[in-house]
Image (cartoon, rainbow, N blue to C red; front, side):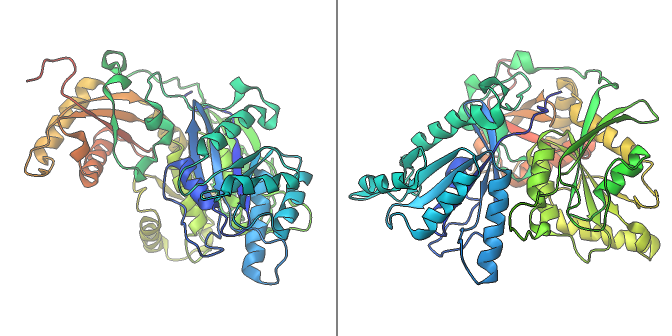
Length: 501
């Protein structure tokens, strides 16, 4: 089993509005996913990213600005989201602003963080300029340790912050250093700046591997047998009250979970092993809701992603449960689907409560169009219409999950891949760039879960994103990679087993 069964740690970025949390998030994830602007409160919803440093992986969460006291509804909602992020986090980075020094709200936030008994790093941002480093010394008065001066916009001090995070990671949840979840690379390595765990599934740009990154003779493979008795870990995810617990109860044939119309009934992640009628072994992971603590008036609809993220970390297939009674598909559902794909999970979409919808096949076709519009990057995911309450349509769900799991573990022989590649390129050659031809010469599969292929070309940096998507679509159709993400790496060169001109 390639995916670790252990949950990745969660690191939350917390602080007042406009102190630079999103800049740090972008530095950590090497992306521009978080909006950065001088307008206070620009970030409202939490932003999630996966980080892999020195062989260790964790999730980082960017939160909205925390204002301890406000009569306005938006700051209150942002504060609630921050509190949820802190509650679910294993490590908190408290971001402050050196230009203004410790503010009253900083003292309130520091006091709140101390009461959580969680490890906290105080990152003093915006220390660029004269006296910036010296001004960071004032923040030692908050009683937090360590205090690290940084300038996220310029990348200064980020190495020290990174070292502090890595030092804290082995201590999270009391685990030893070697117990921290590490993404399995399937027996091959990439340089740190091109780690497989950094690839963002269907949304990523092509990645170009260095000559030293691979010993091709080791990754050439033939199709292998799949252990049918292996345990399939399945995360059941979706918005609150979509019927996740009812679905699991129906699959198990007993009321193992509390099912209620009250959103957020499920409080803790629960692993439920069982064997179906075909002898296939599963572990169903019911998504945890958010634990209610203190005086937080949680808006449950906003907080389901954190629980799904933890469940997906330990799963190989994610079953995304949609609520047919809702008028539209929520942003949370889209976000969870993206998290599953980025984590290398297979994806099955289930439309629950279909017994409440009238219109028959016409209604199904209309809903499928809605799904296509909401999930344009996941046309490969199988869709099932069910009623967990009445038991309709779920007989084929486990078969579908098992099929998707098998697809994610299959290896295609190099010979078959290259015969397909030759036909695909002949059918639709890559467009010329700068007047020069691009030659796609060779490919081989180098990993499973998710299927990952290495493609050799004379100009890999010139293979356009649209052509990469063409290859992915054709590859998926030819070898039935339904329900799983496909990752493509590009390397300069030709057939490594032949001499090239």
